[in-house]
Length: 130
Image (tube, rainbow, N blue to C red; front, side, top):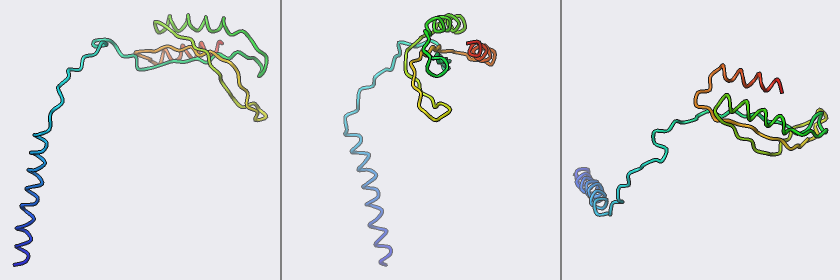
C-alpha cells in the first residue's frame, strides 16, 4: 500500500513540472525573428591560403634588402591566384649553437579557392628558386 501512495505522489509532481515548464515557456516573450541576409550572398569562398616567408638576412646576420623578392612574389602569386598581399613581421629561429636569431621578414600570401596539386608544386618550385 505504501508503494502505491508513493507512485500516486510522483506522477502529479512529474506532470506538474513538465506542464509548468511548458506554461512558463509559453508566457515568455519571444524574440522577434530576424532574417539573416549576407552581403556576400552568392560570392565564392576562398578556403585555402598560400604563404611564403621572405627573410631580410643572409647567412644568419648579414642584412639584405628583400624588396625585389617581395615584389617578385607579389607578381607570381597575383598571376597564380588573382591577387596577393605582403605584410612585414618578425621571425625567429634557432641557430646551430641554439641561439635565438630574430630577423625582419615579409610574408606574401594569397587566398585560393581551388588549391590543387599542380598549384602547390608551382609554389614549391618558386620557393626553391628564391
